[in-house]
Amino acid sequence: MSTAVNLEIEMLRKPETIREIELEFTKNIFENRFFKNKSYLISNSKSIAFESTWNLNPQQFCLDTYDIYEIYPIILLVNNVNSMFEFKVENITNKIIAPTIYTIFNLLLS
Image (cartoon, rainbow, N blue to C red; front, side, top):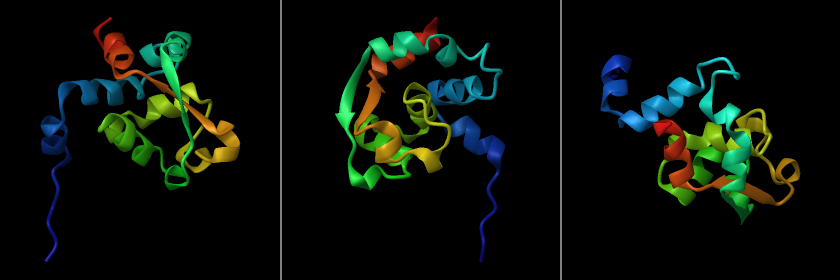
């Protein structure tokens, strides 16, 4: 027997910051706070060696690094990767740029 999912209820269950991040990526790139502050994100980042388990799986990278998988669009943005299907070691040059969680949440508050 299948179970129905109400997307509105699921969205309300998510923490407010995650909803704000998702909302930013529905905006035009010139209105998106993360895109407009990409250099700030990069300058407040650390480099992490790419692991094979993260190949095509930026959500797993985010889960392993931040314990929050929903911030993967930010990781794709700062690493100049257009989609999850391009999240490969050869497209990232062996190092993933990973902004600090403080930097990410600081942009949400601005």
